[in-house]
Amino acid sequence: MTIADKALPAQWETARLGDVVAILDSQRVPVNATERAKRPGPIPYYGATGQVGWIDDFLFDEELLLLGEDGAPFLEAGKRVAYLIRGKSWVNNHAHVLRTLGKMPVGFLRYQLNQVEYRPFVSGTTRLKLPQAPMKQIPLLIPPEAEQHRISDALDSIFSKLDAAVAALERVRANLKRYRASVLKAAVEGRLVPTEAELALKEGRDFEPASALLDRVLAERRRRWEETELARMKIVGKPPKDDRWKSKYKEPVAPRASALPELPAGWCWASIDHLSSEVRYGTSEKTNENPAGVPVLRMGNIVDGGLDFTTLKYLPKNHHEFPDLLLADSDLLFNRTNSAELVGKTAVFKSRGVPFSFASYLIRVRLLSDCSPDYISSFLNSFHGRRWIGSVVSQMVGQANVNGSKLKNCFIPLPPRAEQRRIVSEVERLSTVIQSNSVSCDLAIIRSRRLRESILKWAFEGKLVDQDPNDESATVLLERICAERAAAAPSGKSRKSNTHEVEAAK
Image (cartoon, rainbow, N blue to C red; front, side, top):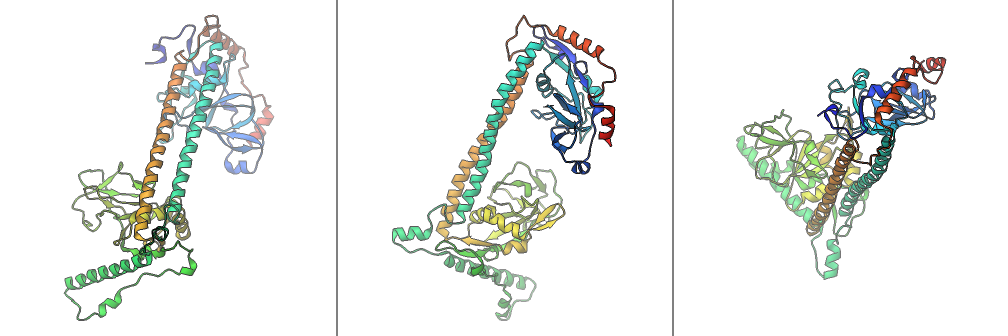
């Protein structure tokens, strides 16, 4: 249904945007960032969706409405495409410059232009553009001038409270992220749950320190290597005649205790190389959209320490790298290549009853018995893990990288096994609480956006404020605007001199 088809409230009229505003686009002067850097000053410099810099002079000195010409989010519900400016300003050629006529309040027009359906008026694909000619044809609802002021004032009041509520929700969401980070930091520092040493002392018992756990893990690591190596030699028809082949086993690099922070009682340092039987890159084969195949986890599937399975790619079930590149329950996935702030994000794969694989930008770490992958993931996602990643990352063109060799040499503060279980359980409990509150914040923010859209709809249906039959009708307002346009000078020059405009454009 178009505006023309709607039943208008009493004393309302319809008009086109070009009929109720003066368009000052000819007075815009674009100045690129390099030139602006040579002209620093206190005057705000505006673009399609807001201020984009500062400059030393001004083109306008009044209250105006700017409407995006290109690069604005015209088709994104709830996004701002029109905004108000006051005082001295400079505007580039990415925003239309509009001056209201007939004493029409600028705020009223701004609200209406931010809820217009722009699809019929914009052109382009990757970067939408609103040319001046179709912009002039945008249909508007015109209430009496007094009612416009009442609507604008009501919307200002309602939206200021709504904006404050959304800002509070955003702060809560940011605080939840900080709280999650503090939980992980405390977890790997031995401060989240009572340590095994503390409990053993309190209960008058002994406990197995992490060093004993590490000895057991290293024995398993060597045993697995020997089993694999022996099987390989038999397959190629060269079974060993003695035990000299065992000398080829490479011991993991031992940490230098003096170079590492002191740990809680019962803890020890161990590298990923100590604790794992495999550190392996994923497939570089091109995936497809066919869900009949095997889903392949990619770097985008790792979100906030967990795995998001909503967006998947696939490889055929008979892919030549299978079954070697199929994931097992409790495999650790490490994102080796990404932007600097995201590289190294980590999650643990939990079996879902169907085969899964992983892509080349991920590294699979298969840990040995008695090593909790969830604890290792907590460390890599913690402040200390992020700091280690930052110390070893290699910066490539547009991306950061931490390779498998570096990952093997990452040293983990290892608690006793029982303490690992308690840490993981408490991290999971608190993460559930954090996630629940975060989802609640997200839903509340979405509801606030929908409420904003509903309020705007009510406003331009004449349902938000009372209507006064004594108001001067919109017909009289439009007649006054028409007379004002007719009386205006045809040149439409800026209040600044022609000489100044020429100098500003240089």
